[in-house]
Amino acid sequence: MITFIISLVALVLGYLVYGAVMERVMRPDDRVTPAIRLADGVDYVALPTWKVFMIQFLNIAGTGPIFGAIMGMWFGPASYLWIVLGCIFAGAVHDFMSGMLSLRHDGANLPTLIGKYLGGGTRSVMLVFTVLLLMMVGAVFVYSPALILKGMWGGDDATIWWIVAIFAYYVFATLLPIDKIIGRIYPLFAIALLVMAAGLLVGLFVKMPHLPELWNMGDMSQWTASQVVDGKDTLGITAYLQKNPLFPCLFITIACGAISGFHATQSPLMARCLKSERLARPVFYGAMITEGLVALIWATVSSYFFYYGGWKEVVDPEVVNDFMAQVQLADGKTLIQYFTAPQLVNLVCSSWLGIVGGTLAVLGVVAAPITSGDTAFRSARLIIAEALHFEQKSMVRRLAISVPLFVASLLLLIWQMKNPDGFNVLWQYFGWSNQALSVFTLWMITVYLARNRKCYLITLIPAVFMTVVCTTFMVASPQALGHSEYTAWTALAVIVVAIVWFAAWLKRDRGQIR
Image: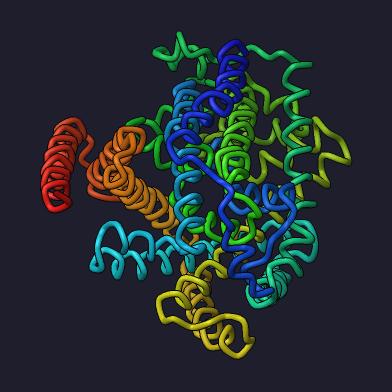
């Protein structure tokens, strides 16, 4: 628990100290914001600050800081380092800067900002790339909550009806003014997610479980030994890590709790609703730190659940005995295959928080992805509209963009449902694409800072690091080339190329300015 407590304090200090540094770099002032200057009653709508924060938090959170943190903890306490350092120095900076740039460019979406600072060619590529990513988010976040809901109400035959219901909601949330649905129900869901996290935090301090600490993370055997039955690795974590090396796979697995490119598509939504630039730090930087806290809590809960037998406490004894019998029969199942992330969330919440916890689990596991899905479609509509110079005040114009978008997403959803492993394949593509988008966003911000003679190192370092992560993942991951032996050489080559390229660009760009 010591590492966990230190990490909690570090995240709070990160907001207070490094968040203040970000404010000094960008210098928010009292200029009129797009929400007031360009108010249209649909997307540019000034909202109360607390609502903007809650919507931003839920937009970027979804199931990312929960499911990603649970799976990321398979890599051990190194996950704590990535959540804390990634959130403070990369993710929160990424979200705050992209939100500020959108505020100062009339609420512009990410592809427009990338085009302004990285060139028209990059803008065209990122326009297609971003829309495809948002469509994947929508498709994934229709299917996953539908599967959970059918398990609770209706059985297997109800899956299609839940999909229809969720997709119908997406249509309304995408087309209606932002204050009609999103502005009213998102804050309630966000509060539920925060209350659930707070309840688990209290549970951790009450239980004070023995957990892996950062200073002894080199010996995985001491964590997994208690889960070995008849010589079999019931956890399955050792086998998993042999196929998925900590670097770079950890940094793809935990995205939303540390840094996520998807967030840069969401910040412009709230940049169009802020009443003052001075609110950017609590809304953008603060929402990311809050998400980091949620990820940290779930990483710790899953650490206890997996490594020190916490699953025996929260799972029905008959289920435990049945699982052990299966292990002893050598059917090949492991703990991380037996208990999926959604199952773990429901088990822990219902066990630790009772009936209220079960209700909050439903809201957290089901509502969170649904709300991320609908804002993904809304972002896609606005990005396409901005590219085509289509005003979005009239419903006809909104439908002209949204209908083809929904049709394409439905086709993607049908493909996902017809392929047995469609969800996993789509999720893998989403995970890498998500982090690749953060790479372009960080480089875009770095160029902006350099051109404006601001401290560009604050984003240059994360930009180089995430470029290395995404490149080496394609080399090392078993889902890609699967040559982990080349990870170090690939990382070194990318670092050299990135630094040389940026130095050459900076020299040329400043020469042109003179």
